[in-house]
Amino acid sequence: MSKDRIPGAEARQVHGFLKANRWLISRRVAQLGFFLLFASGPLLGIWIAKGTLASSMTLGVLPLTDPLIFLQSLLARHIPETNAIIGAVIVLLTYLLIGGRIFCSWVCPINPVTDLAAWCRRRLGIKKGWTVKPQARLWVLGAVLVTSAITGTIVFELINPITGVYRGLLFGVSWGLLSVVAIFLFDVFVANQGWCGHVCPVGAFYGLLNETALVRVSASGRVRCDDCMDCYDVCPEIHVISPALKGTKSGAGPVITSRDCTSCGRCIDVCPELVFRFTNRFDNRLDSAEYVTDREVSKISKEAA
Image 1 (tube, rainbow, N blue to C red):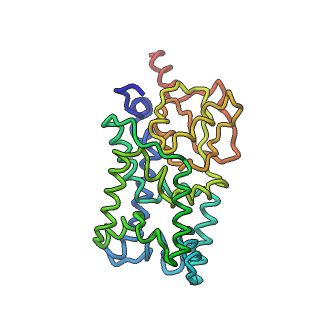
Image 2: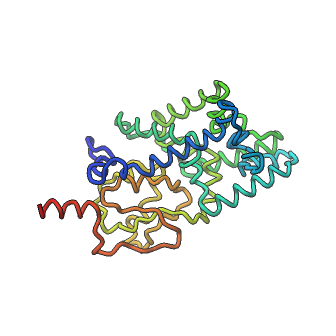
Image 3: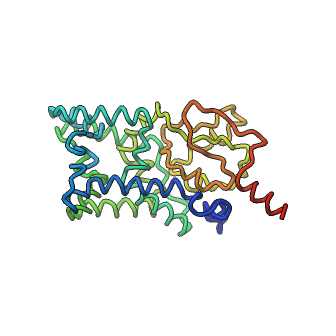
């Protein structure tokens, strides 16, 4: 990316603001919606979902339990209640089907914070930072599970910033909000996408569930790629793009199959050439050479005028 290039600027110019940000806007609406489900009780007295993203009861009938919390509970030798078991199974099967890391980009309240941090890094021109090995988050996940087994406590929940955000916003628990500030500063000044991409054990756990995900992003229009690099600049897991985008040389299909992909859709939004789209893991179709994009239609119309 050139020094003056802003990722997504060309896409906004070509396709308009809403189309060039449709998946980003959709994610923010989803994240706000999940928060309001829990906030309706404390703020309005209308209890839709009681609890937190770790464990909740929706409308008094639907239990939902974070499988990682449930696993820590088992290792800590806690006897789970029936609702906790049912809730964990429901969430586990859901994310095995649609993709575990969808939680990271569509549900988790920390995601807007890390997205803002990444934007600040780009605006401040901070390109270098601490390089964390890809396996680091798996080691953190392993440490959390081992520590839970040794101490007999659900150890990560003691510091979990995901539930800490909700407690901070709804009940004024300051440490939850302080953890958010710490994550923001860490991502801006220490490591790009450091928390979600390299440290968070929740993301690591849901990444393991991503192996079977049906929902995938495909670079079906990769023949049109002009190497502007906008998709790499905004992707929180940049290593997932190349195999699908540059697969014409290696023979790889256009579908991003990496378990690290969060299905955030930012690569779709910022691409002026409409290279990417949402599809399923079995869809290896490629756009034909005759495929005409909105950008090309606009260009043809201008030339005709």
